Length: 289
Image (cartoon, rainbow, N blue to C red):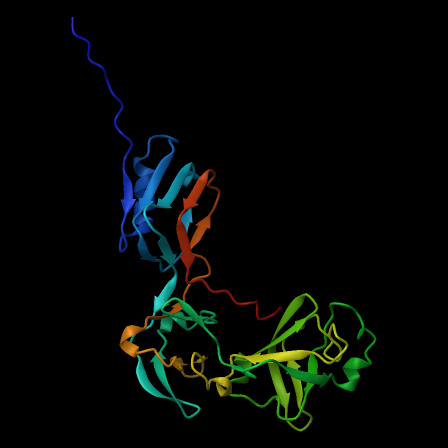
């Protein structure tokens, strides 16, 4: 009598290389894994570009997604192509028309060969300081309430202007342990009064040092003058970038973060990520907050 030992089939091998569709791989893992067995998905080193978040649900748990022998990068950035040379504020720059699919994104960051570049801002070093707020705000009954900031401020001469596309300008005001990111409603040149769409926590007449609040003007075209500066003009859809001295157009990859998240986990348990990097994500503070 002969005995035959029945051996269990080996677990499916799940691997991927740059350029592969990770959503398709996730679906294959769901379909081929046996019951709730623990599986390992191995990604080869390199960049995996995602046009939308890679979503894991309850059926994707008890798994490890990892890279062996290097680093796998899950990237939500969109590479910009079609650059031309031109000028911005009289300075030589590279310009590109941003694809229509990206124009409704926050677009607050730009990366050149993986290095984050500064959005155009003023001043280029340090901060400006407000002189305070209009009298009616300083004397309002709730003027001294903590965390109830003023809705307008008075700028010092030469420190604010009716900037290009004023609605897209952001005023950054650091104070105590928090930051204010304020949208501009209007600027009254005669009184140098800046009025905001959003309310922060700051009373502009006194910061943590007792002096009027310091601030910086972000995303302002007039501030795009130095190497590494960039500005996206929402009125034209054109992004301008002033290259660093050692950068050449045919040697630099410029990309905009195009998603808020590259991975979403919705109800999966026991899911691990090892030796993976996540990049190309952007998020903007709510415009009404």
